[in-house]
Length: 152
Image 1 (cartoon, rainbow, N blue to C red):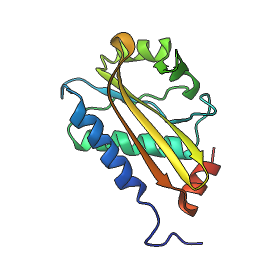
Image 2: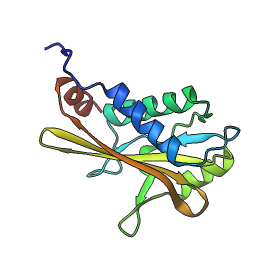
Image 3: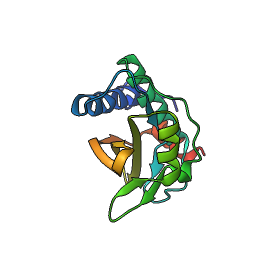
């Protein structure tokens, strides 16, 4: 099956989400941001092609908007840890942030429910785990998206 013109434009959806984070946060153009791989809300230790692809697209948009992005390959399961009803940066991610003098880290989760994928992004300051911007969006699951979810 070929993706038709009606298929969800993932690049555009992620671009809009990245723009929202940038418009809500005070970003210093001289200090990098880290972008962690998005993880499934049901399996925080696991990513997927969808999680990696989305984080790449979000990182690209930050760069296009003049924000430096530090290229860091993190072990996915160390990016987020459940806190009190809130997903917080792990100790390792805070250390990596300090090593790169990162001003913020983009973290995100997604959940698949029926015909939709719900994505939640947060821009977190490594100092004190403070969420400085957040955005949520939902995308219809088409064949294209289904393929990204299946791949590990």
